[in-house]
Length: 263
Ligand SMILES: Nc1ncnc2c1ncn2[C@@H]1O[C@H](COP(=O)(O)OP(=O)(O)OP(=O)(O)O)[C@@H](O)[C@H]1O
Image: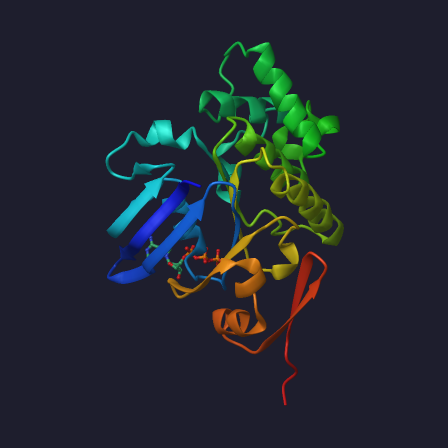
């Protein structure tokens, strides 16, 4: 298995403060990683490095076998699918859901009179269907609910048939039904052997879908634990990561966590 992502001793420093601090992490082809950590831990910063939007201050980062710094990032970005809330502001509200997904095929965010290939359109429609958005293809992106937007962004991130799919808090802001619907769909994707390698950032173990294989826990920019979910996702590691005593339960292929009562 080859490395999809390899960070060696990576730090990102701003104003003398390390947002991520000597992080070494490798993601191999076919692995599905969950990145867990409290607010401000450095998860988004890590994802920005993993998507080539941020260069390390020190250490080395290789994405899809290409070392950051020595490669055309625009070519690299086409091979990486990224779904994050930060995209909301970049995507025009009056564009249809179908156009929103289609523009990804051209490395753009705005529909500008391109004549789209029928194959691209068929692919966009199939991805929207897979994410439960078949009924919404002609709706304006700006009129969608939070959950519908999130699912559209995941379809969009898959449009270029990426080798690495990065999801930044895909279930944030969803209600219970929306979260469970998304977890089921992400579970289907994670268990599809033809789906890309995946990295999903989240705050909650309840959002880990079946099929995710590895976990990275980060606190104050430092890696607290990294490795297979079966061995690394433990109450001890989770408590260290979030900074309070937690219990962790596994229910088949799902997880839940709770704080211990005060006393
Ligand atoms: N440009 C910057 N300059 C200084 N500090 C920054 C900068 N960008 C982020 N930070 C700080 O770095 C830390 C890590 O931020 P990051 O967004 O990566 O955390 P996160 O784990 O994704 O947090 P959250 O779960 O709240 O989204 C935070 O304390 C944040 O305030």
